Amino acid sequence: MSVDFTELATLINLNSHSHNKAGIDANAAIFGSWMQALGYATKTYHREAIGNHVHFCATRRDGPRVLLLGHLDTVFPPGTFTDFSEDEEWVYGPGVCDMKGGNYVALCALRKVYAQQGDIGNIDMLLVSDEETGSDDSKALTAKLAADYDIALVFEAAGKNNEVVIARKGIATYFIKITGKGAHAGNHYSEGVNANLAAAHLTIYLTSLTCLEKGTTVNVGKITGGLSANTISPQAQLVVEARFTGNDEKRRILAAFEHLPKHNPVADSFLTVTGGLQRDVMQSCAKQKQLLRQIEEILGYPLNVEKRGGVSDANVTAGAGVATLDGFGPFGDGDHTINERASKASFHLRVNEVAKILAAFNQPR
Ligand SMILES: [Zn+2]
Image (cartoon, rainbow, N blue to C red; front, side):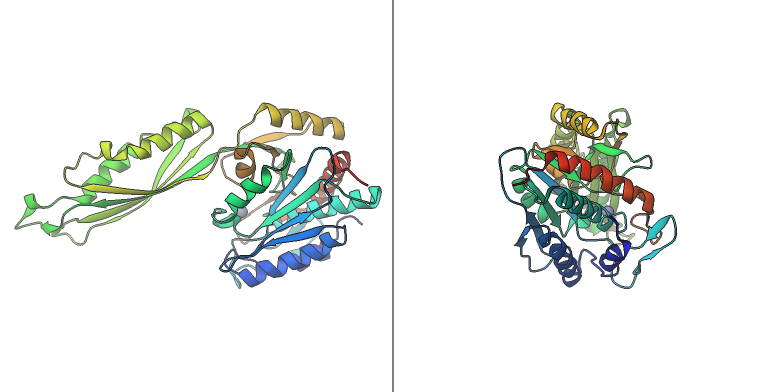
């Protein structure tokens, strides 16, 4: 049987919340033992505070190089959503679709290729440990490693009709600190500089940068500030997230944050802006279209495609200039909730599809 859900259960039952280093490393060790059986060498990128990132490398030969990409971490702390379960149609548990299930699809496909061709060359796999917290640590590593590949296939969950993902919005996150001047609101009103007022003006300005037509959104998601009703607020903070579908809009938004002080009308208040681009835009491009055509030729039928607002590490490889397609994992829903589940049928479908694709790209001995 090509998909053994008891193996998947072993991974699911071993908690690997983003802050559970021991659990993530243990998941990597089990997965690594399965990859080693296929002839893979493991390169471990050791991390002290978070789980290690692991890069499974096949033999290098001539021909195109393929990177399979997944993440080991989940959003569930130990004790919150723990166990694997299944019925006829579905598997349930933390990570069954996001994305231990996807990692497992890649493994099962590689096993099929190995069984058919006896050896695997030029197809590597990278599993990072911090995707659910924004890939803050791994994104530089992923971008650097990706530069060595021609193709990246990412195993986040498939769409409802088994869509693969051709585009994802880019995302930028900013922390804005506003410094005003505190004063007694009764005795010294005009001596104060109200940071909350600046926060209000900036909230309106930043929100106005949204352009739904172009898929650009700017969300002032958190505002804090002030001390009490009778004090002119000496400080305020905004936490802002922006998402965009194209590079033009990315540039427009990043420039707006650079010039933000110009849009603060409250005299004598000061801004400190930190943060910036978190994940680059994943855009459909000529290279990607060619890859999609090539894959459809291998499969003998067209694939459904979709664009998503949420980010993944596909943004990173696409941003690094590698032809990238995402969504090769199983279809599932309820991800990031205790109702997370994945369709058993979609596991079988994806394993067969990915095995065919990888068999065509494989460079055996
Ligand atoms: Zn996720």
